[in-house]
Image (tube, rainbow, N blue to C red):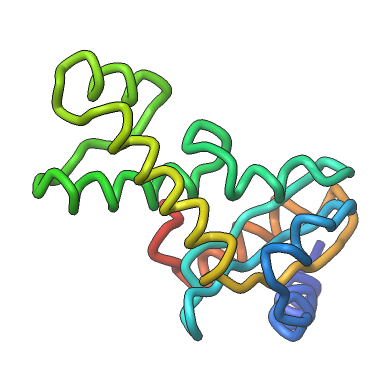
Length: 150
């Protein structure tokens, strides 16, 4: 894949139709997705799996998708009024066992993140050949520099 190929694929991806969460979760092909909050790109991801699984994971649980984890971390930081460290699979048990947050509050914040993803974010999806996906995702992240990608 040449530099020019990447540019052409990138332009096609950004020219694709804007979708809702309900529309994006029905995608069954491989490709990259660009996530918008209002007009701003906040995340770029890829799925090299066929089927509906990956894109449904966006609004399931913080352990299932990086964007979900980062949005939940941001909400927990605001709720606790501290700069909460990056989330991992032990985060919930540390918060609950340490009595930093109740199970109920954690569940409410997770639901708030899921509802935000489902109702407030918009998506673009660009289907491409599996061997192009990783390079196109990295190129798109490098060009757009979304705040929720590392």
